[in-house]
Length: 473
Image 1 (cartoon, rainbow, N blue to C red):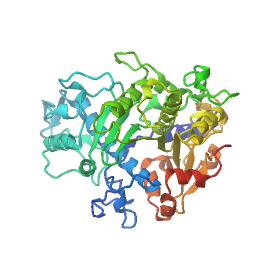
Image 2 (image 1 turned 90 degrees about the vertical axis):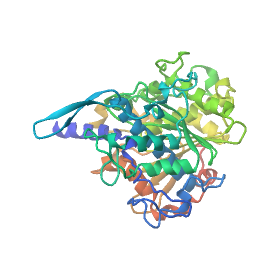
Image 3 (image 1 turned 180 degrees about the vertical axis):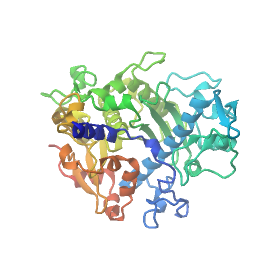
Image 4 (image 1 turned 60 degrees about the horizontal axis):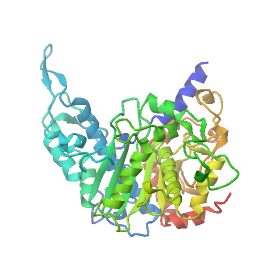
């Protein structure tokens, strides 16, 4: 029984991996001259190249460009989320600090200009399309950090920030600020970030980023953070209704497509506090569609739409991209201004649907309206199906009914990435002693940077689809 408990807990714990564990020191940063600015184990002289700068890519984006640009965008969002989490939890609260061996004093936390981070509290009228009342720029984040370093503590060598109860004044910039500097150079802005009803246990959290230099709009979904998310992850029952309510939602006849119940519920639940009572997915689509329609820097200027996430975030990105493509095919007004092609690039994405869902997904792939580059690590159990006993005892539903979709980039620690289409693997084939490490985004970044992968990365998304083989199966 002890072995069973350990095994079940290990599989569930592997899914509790949140993108915010990635720090600025984990993602290679290159300046305009291609000089590496941080001392990451992933960013050695071979891998920290100038094309990792978001401002340095052509419009016919290679996999190299797409992977690293999305990692940088995600890192920017996670850095903001890290700061925001601390401000939300501590602003106006009474805290206590030690003043001696047996003495302490209380104080009230008062950040300088918190509205730079908590933009939903501003005086402006809120748009129905987003939580934020105004966008968050890198300059605003940097200004806030310069004003409030005394409230933050950064671990030696970088990492997730903590609240500094000692309120120690600091003048030296944090490593995390390098991420903000990079975002400033490429004119990146967070137009929405919704964590309004998230807790330490989890909840749907996403950010929408406009990158004017890259001409991208990117939706970033957060991964698993706690028990609520873990219970969502394990609900593998099939939902045949939410994404396929009517015959008009099904483009491949004869099937019964279904999606992961837990992930689907996150997206299709009514958004709390939404003035129109919309579902979470509809609220996100509304924000994105409005940017393509009304943002003067975006509308009619050929911007692309990307969706990304790690772990749970990858599963949500998969489903979000599919639903957007499905609605575009139906000529739904909610996505009228979205581009015809939507690209998802995910890390450690779990299974999200059955074979018939995959056929629906393939319908849009064949038309060129939907692409999914699914990055997975050899030895990571989260992207697998056919979970075996005793781990399967913790799962609701039958994982053998599921399959992966999209083009798979299977990363190894010591050899060239393997390219395949779908490439669904059973859990037993990936199980080992390092499943927790192999699922971490830091391990994904380390393997992404392997020099042996360079040749594969020079292909575009379309070329990679061709190289992966026949995707009509």
